[in-house]
Image 1: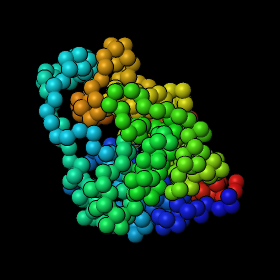
Image 2: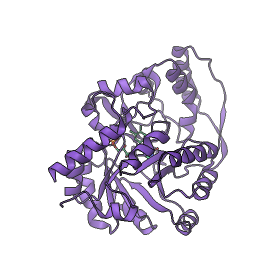
Image 3: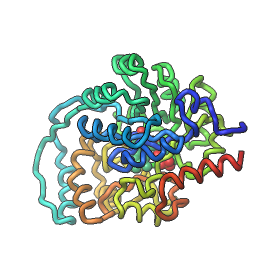
Image 4: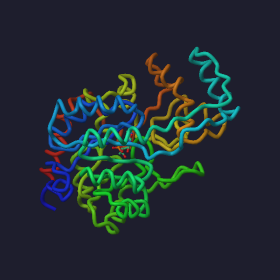
Amino acid sequence: MKSLDTNFCSVFGIRYPVVLAGMAGGPSTPELVATISRAGGLGTLGAAYMTPEKIREAIRSIRKLTDAPFAVNLFISQMQTSTVPIERNVQYTLNQMRDDLGLPQKYDTSITITDNFDQQFAVLIEEKVPVISTAFGILSNRYRDQAKAAGVKLIAMATTVEEAILAEKAGCDAVVAQGMEAGGHRGTFDVSDQSMGANVGLFSLLPQIVDHLHIPVLAAGGIMDGRGLVAALALGASGVQMGTKFLTTIESGAHPAYKQALIKAKTEDVVLTTVFSGRPARGIKNRFMEHWEKIGVQPMHFPIQNSLTRDIRDAASAENNTDYMSLWAGQGVGILTQEQYAEEVFLEIVGEANRLL
Ligand SMILES: Cc1cc2nc3c(=O)[nH]c(=O)nc-3n(C[C@H](O)[C@H](O)[C@H](O)COP(=O)(O)O)c2cc1C
């Protein structure tokens, strides 16, 4: 291991094996994505919660800023369009929070979930994005074949050796090994039993996945600097995927109050929860999580819970109130300092890694 020029770089046509994680919900702005790609990494647009029109706009904005390769990330569809009953205890718990925020109570007994994955995916093919990455599973054959025919490279995120093998067999060009330290949602393929999914530490997971795969493996979870990048390479990774580190950059679209909370947080403040979206995810503990824990009500499945909690999260954002926002963060959060330009952060990471190598 002598250089950062790994097989991931040659397969994806980039200079440094550092991927900006796609971060759904706004942090991975076109400016942040383009900055990382322009600097020689692979920027990823977190497009899971975006409408097809907004995805198209964002892709075009990225292309105005750089000619370099970039990726777009989607969640593998968890539910078809349908109307489902809302559990009374869930609505009751949410209404207590609405009360706290001065929001109107809601008494709806059902909610309609719209699945627009097909339209989102179509935009990625029409716009000829260089790379598509996925969380929560792998593309079905139909989508995989469309992507391959369009010359798109594919990356999937895995939390176990079995998931990583499935991703390789399904034709992925690289796999992200997501350790339990990671911020945001767990990539676990199946959490239909509402479990927390597999939560294996990156130091244990990464070499096991590397040993079973023939394609490049990226390490994700708690990597915050050049030391983490070199450690990942030493364990057999061909690169890293980093989310939390870039949340506090100037180009990040994370809410200013969320950025402040990240800078203040200690590593022991970040915990796993299903209460915001119905799927396990790691973030800074706040009143939203504590309230739910105290009441003890089982949240609904993803993406129902995610839709049900949206008015509360939106109102909290409008009021700069971090008590009720989802504050996704990885266990490396204690390393964050002040806001910096993303290019500076990126060059520090690769500079330090080069020195260590
Ligand atoms: C705010 C935030 C949002 C995230 N959103 C997504 C997402 O939309 N899609 C995805 O594949 N991974 C998402 N992730 C997880 C990342 O892919 C990656 O596994 C994680 O950031 C790695 O851990 P780190 O945050 O400690 O660097 C998100 C992570 C964070 C912190």
